[in-house]
Image 1 (cartoon, helix red, strand yellow):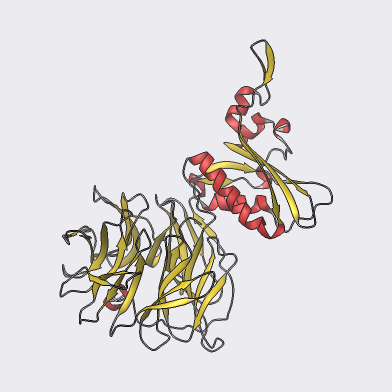
Image 2 (cartoon, one colour):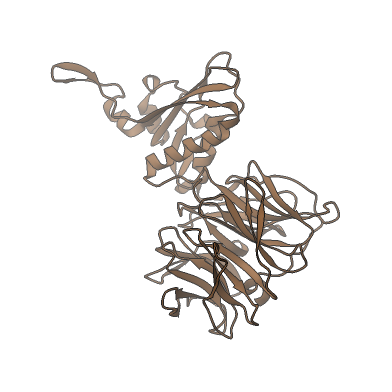
Amino acid sequence: MNKINSILLSLFFICFSLESHATLEIYITEGVNNARPIGIVPFHVSAGTVLPSSIDEVVAADLTRSGKFFALNRQQMPQLPKSDSEVDYSEWAASGAEALLIGHVQQQGADEFKVSLQLLDVIRGQITGGQTQMRSNGQLVTNRDHILDEWSWVISGDDFRQYAHRISDIIYEKLTGEKGAFLTQIAYIIVRDSETEAKPFQLIVADYDGKNENVLLRSNEPLMSPSWSPDGRKLAYVSFENKKPQIFIQDIYTGSRTMITDFPGINGAPTFSPDGNQLAMVLSKDGNPEIYVMDLASKRLRQITRNRAIDTEPSWSPDGKHLIFSSERGGKPQIYRVNLNTGKTRRVTFEGDMNLGGTYTPDGTQMVMVNRTRGNYHIAKQGVDSGDMLVLTKTFLDESPSLAPNGSMIIYSTLHEGRQVLSLVSLDGRFKARLPVSEGQVKSPSWSPFL
């Protein structure tokens, strides 16, 4: 990664000779041993019910990929209960499971299914015996403290995967107190083989797990830097389809798009403000790459930085009051912070050879970035107040980190076996996974907000 690639966002991608078309698949590479065991029992399906897909398999995969949980496989389950009354809590406690999800699916129409769920606390169930009878005000009542929650929905076959992700979100929040991010999407760029694809550069949106891939744009010229609007309806990105860099905003549902900038020189690194009303960007229309902010309603530009060095890669603080950006004004790329009201700018990273591509965590307490130390580019995080840095990855040539909206995971671009792929790492660095695609180079990931 040279200076132009890391600071000016590289004007051109290299096409490799590869086959075409495949969706992303997640391969967990590290961190399962640190996760909390959970039992996702294969859902009981009523006689005559034909399922369009398996909800329990999606939920188990989601929770395992979160890095917080490890879903037991079928061979590790001591039993396959259909309801809480059939659960042997001692056996499940011995398996290590802390919680247990039991489901039932019944077809109610040509394409309607009733899905009923119980989430059980294994430890509490073991202590109380599950259904212990106790006397209260002279009456016998059933102790249900071991049931964390119960749900029931009627859904269509087309909604099975979406509801599975929704169920994962609910369970994740119930067990961790944090909002789940499984019902989200990622945007990324794939570079296909130019010998088989007339337009090899493709802007793609998919579910967070790589399923339901949707190509938003195909181009015979490079595409880069996709960035989500806060409402999750639009993407800003850079396109070279007119033989020069231009910034566009595209509606992901209607496909309509608008050219936002067409200035001489660099038009790059667009990123929406937290309220969606402004767009930060890098422009060199006056000679030097500087950070600007555009009011999207009026298209009025405000220049934020003025320095002879290269300033690039702006990212908003969650409150919209600051931008962090990469700059060479200190000699090598480091991350700086500018107050948008006062214009006061200060350097915020000091460890390693260089730091770039910074972004805030959703709670604003930490920054995630690319850190280069002894020639290695890795994803790192740094406390905003403490300044303490922790390197999270050990993969090769890591770049373009983007955070899940709940701040739990980071998706980034890296090299694996000579191919550019996407990878995941948890914010604590313990859980790691890879999302290789069998055809094409995958880069510039951007995680959506909550949808």
